[in-house]
Image 1: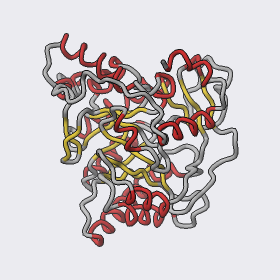
Image 2: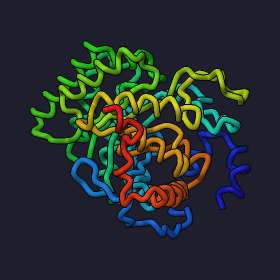
Image 3: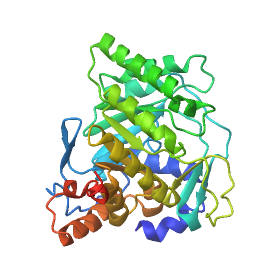
Image 4: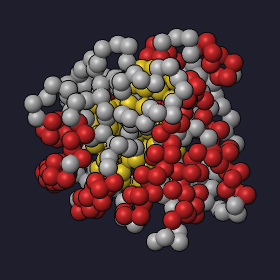
Length: 352
């Protein structure tokens, strides 16, 4: 059905279309899909000690204000990440700030952490308990004088209601946010967060979402720091601020973060580099261009244990998880494996 109405949806401003999608999910207007692969043993896994139906998650950015996470579980997502949430409510950058690149199956956004703020999101989740594994992605306010403290506020607000918390240091739409990738700042950030967890007597798993635009020399230092502070997972990766050269759409020069198919190979290569350095000590969640069984397969063999998507649903519609599982299961059966876990990191088997 989505393929029939997609041309109409794509005539609407992307941000308005997104708001309509959120409203539809809140009102339960999306169709119920028969998922022949629900509870299939080939996809079952666990994340942070909790069993989940499949390793396909909704990335942060879709459900910014934690309004429809339970509806997303109904669509088949194995886990959902909401946010990015900042301590205080903020509008974000000026509109227009989201652009579809239809020819490239991509989006460019410069939203700038638009959200209702931590108190609002906290109250909503407490009044509507999650029916699946829920992650909360946190970041600092644009005009904050102490961004490190903003992350601490996020930990305090959500450590007792989230299944994990993602530290977003990688959005290209908040000025100088990516400076947290620098070795000294990254160490300070993780050390401060670990101290806060001890103070709170919390065992909340910490996940870090990184930029795809980091230079190779930073990958090793980031890996060492992740291991040092026993970070539970790394999300590879956020949107890219560059890589416009091969795009075809006329809107390719819009400022912001690029997501979707053009990010796929970039993300896969970065996943492989981290996989070889982390050596199974830290989970890798792969993001970028996931919209089919084949694209999910490439993430797993590159070294990801889980995948997330957002742009893929924009172009494929609400049945995207069902589609991915159906296609991926066929690939796995053809390869003679009983679980997707058997293919994780296969590209590097002979290199380790």
